[in-house]
Image 1 (spheres, rainbow, N blue to C red):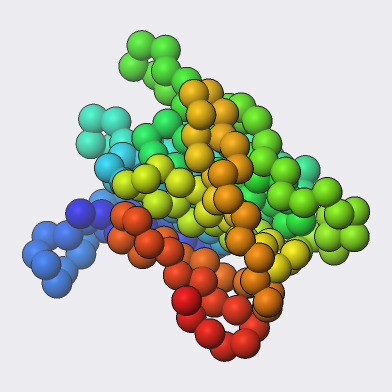
Image 2: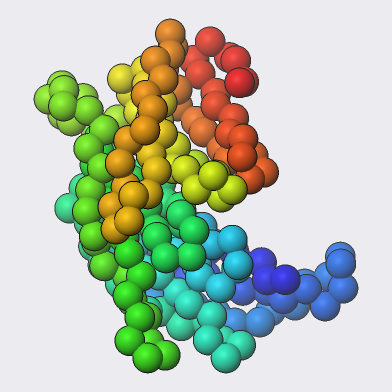
Length: 195
């Protein structure tokens, strides 16, 4: 039971000593940019901290967290999420979504960019650098993405790559998405609706 709090480029970890009391546990300072996005995997053994263009992945090893991957993206990051135990999705404004795969060598592990998910072929949307949001449904193992082209896209893993299995057109823009439980997701749109 650990709580991660980002303060600038530093991440403070707190451990629960009682259900209502947390105490300082560890400080992570491998990030050089202000941390804007935090996400953890379902087992709570990996943590990703992303800044404007920087991605740092931490892993829990022998009771302590340490950085296992550090990389910089070419364009600003809009969202991050783990997709199961071995995959990490990093969305860049305007696209694409980078799919990172965990590579293990003995007790060491690191993440590398395996491939990209192209959201839209429209050059106008690439130029606008619209925010892309991510949600992961663990039970069916599906990644859900939203973009500025009024579409929700659903992706599924096929062996070593992710491919699109469904595209849902929406009347309004979909600026937000959140995985709810293991098999549902909620979206918001500019018509003030929650679905």
